[in-house]
Length: 282
Image 1 (cartoon, one colour):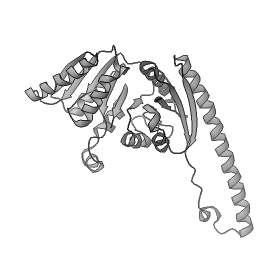
Image 2 (tube, helix red, strand yellow):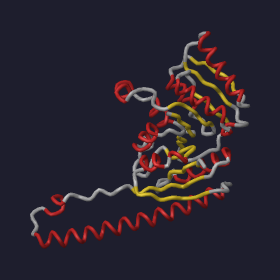
Image 3 (cartoon, rainbow, N blue to C red):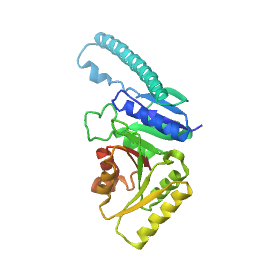
Image 4 (cartoon, rainbow, N blue to C red):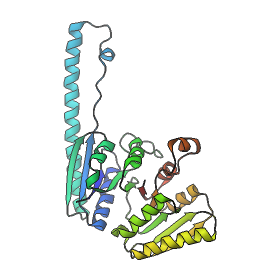
């Protein structure tokens, strides 16, 4: 059965990830899984460790380093198990009836790819443990996951607020249309007020595209209001993401890496300044 995967680490966003996962799990009637990964450790090169010391001292040093490395790995594993137990308890407290946990030795993108066949939504914080001191940073693994994931990725801020309204950023692109079709058929947004937002000029074609999208949501028993704004897309998305009680749904990375390097990424810029949860579809 497809599950909601909560990607946790020792960062402060882990609590937010668990709360968002519990919310999704109940809305979708899907089981939740707390996932913790232990990145593969790269051992130091011999030349970096020995310098000009003798062979006997070198062998002794390497044995001590191997033992220290073993102890660090053991401690990291035990810490991960403690975090997973706490995550399970938190999600059960939030109303999840079916919760499991899993610890893997892999990078997070690799682990999620291996679990893709049994995944419905991936939930993770905007910043992992290594980036949480930089308030406006987007974790490097997050971008990789967004580019690789076949499933929606829910990105939480440091504090989760249950959504009371939804904004769907819609531009009639193939990515936006796939997102809209998926959301229309999903119970995730049931009974929530929805705003269909398009940042474009007010033309008959754009009005027709929004009304067609509105009709598709109505077929899925969802009521949406349409809004056409002539603001530039990034400004419109930032305004939509300024309310913590909003769930912003949008496509991820609509251009190549080269174009994003030259003109910037709307995806990254939106995530950096979002005060609300963002549901992204590649």
